[in-house]
Length: 357
Image 1: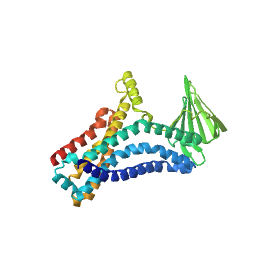
Image 2: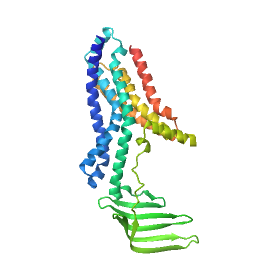
Image 3: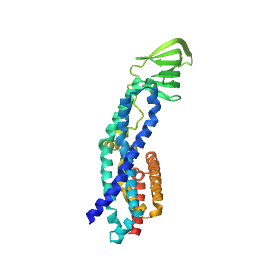
């Protein structure tokens, strides 16, 4: 009889869980595609490259979707049983609430293992491949690297400032670049516009200014000037956090190295370690929360239970990001920023289940 109950409850939970997981993975990867679709369309990125880029985002999307899918799967499955009075029948027959929740908690444990494994062995590799892929796109379309109104470091002694970027024509407008010189004042070059050629940046209506140590200004104008950019972007990488491509062992090693140099310098790595583990364990936390939420919604309140579940998910991710920011800023210890929310949910869920036992 207990095994029959487990199989029955598991079937009720796995269906909504699978649908929720697929839905959220599609939504997350779709959001990623939406954020880069303008660049993709403007620069004619081939469809196979787009498909590869999206495929590389799936592992990270799965890790983010597993907790919410666990919560929705368990909530919808248990709510369905509650709406048909089946949970009441099971409890009347002597089945305890913790016993009824065992399949949901088992799903939470499986989801924790899956999230931890994917974030350790798949996500760093996928992020690294996506990083290299975007880097290659940037190398083929050099104007992608420059952002209007922002300084761009193009080498150890060269900084660019661009007023406008025409990515369709791979053209820079209102170009300023500063060349620093050891023991001397920097040289300022200004050009009305500049276009990328295979190995050079061709500037038109260019002029340069140099202020010597005596305060005398030297300047000259040129109809055109070529700037050697053969290795201009060789050291430029997409703006991804380096921690996203690291495994736990690498993060721990980096944290130790930074802490040996100076206490507190490894905080960013410590926050990432705690955040990853806490995010994986949130699958089990949400499975526990689903059992607590279900107790408050009867047949007429099933929709309300689903809406409350979605609200909980939204608030959870917002608070987790906020706590992570506080951890990175040093306002909270890394362990507290990673585990405070999970601990609060577990305590509230256990208290609710204890009262309903």
